[in-house]
Image 1 (tube, rainbow, N blue to C red):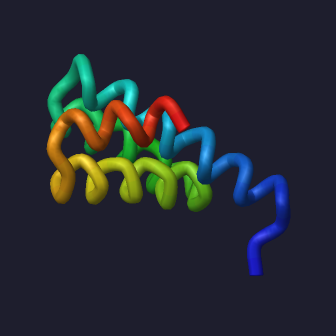
Image 2 (cartoon, rainbow, N blue to C red):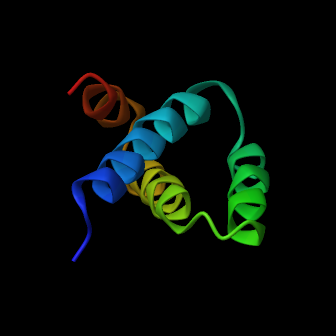
Length: 69
């Protein structure tokens, strides 16, 4: 089970990553993901991967709605 702090980190990186995907390619986000994986920032990685997957499965208007939640 995740702590509140861990969940907050995941949620923050998820939202930040969705913003990044609006203006940058997925390749840029994958570079950021690789950095966090190398440094064992697992909560960051979970949030970034969640955003990448959400972006792949949903059209832009739903991504924008998710950001605004």
